Length: 164
Image (tube, rainbow, N blue to C red):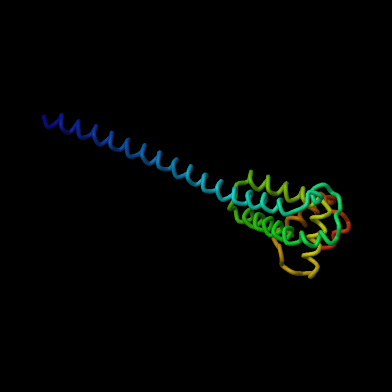
């Protein structure tokens, strides 16, 4: 009889151990899922901010056409917000706070927008101070892109220079 109880206790211990292990595996998967959802929510806030900024910029800025200089000045606050957002995105990537796929998407959008004269013109306006650290992370990205492609910015963009 004692032998049966020992056998039952061993089986009970094995079952309990298995249940605990399965619970830990399930908990880990739940934590990973929650972490991924938090990261996606965090990243979506940046996408929403980008869409908000787009509403404040003229459509001409994305068509490569120029617009009146008087109107250009009124859009500088929106360009400033865009550069600030892009700089923060660069910072988050450099500190591994966003997913690589998210960074690839954001980075390609930043580079694409800088193909338009309005963005380069606004960038130059904010970089006129020379060696300021305004938008430092974004400046590094743009310098790196210029170094590797050598052609995405016009020659008129004076504040983005090849490093070295």
